[in-house]
Length: 196
Image (cartoon, rainbow, N blue to C red; front, side, top):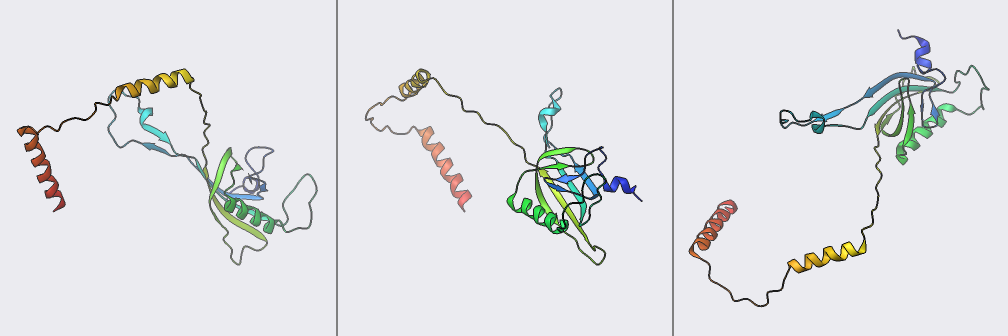
């Protein structure tokens, strides 16, 4: 049986498990997954293996509980509202709006996480608790930058490209050589074989 304090509170002192603004009363299970893709092609001897492996976005799955009466040692007990229903509404809203959330777990604080799946199992033993399972995936962000090109350089590049395409005027048609005719026959034959 797990130590009750490790279920009720985060392993890091002063930090409670949370999903965005939703604070959990209990984290029953956490799964932290780090994946990497490795090339299936052979790597040249002496090459850098790291050039052929890249990390997938991190994934975290949490099974937790929220009650109507949270355990609070310091501070007031809050209002009389039903925290379970409020937490349910907030979690569903985060899922539907696909908002990026900060996820506080017993091991690490994850930023830029998105809810991939969300479930709320209920049975006769659930009582006044909201049980849920949520899986998250990291949403990676990048920054783009626009760089201006000097107008003189752009004009020179355009001039070079245009100079390479000279108009040769009207040209007389020439007959194909026997070698060119033979090559064209072979191509037609192969094409017909493919079509049939």
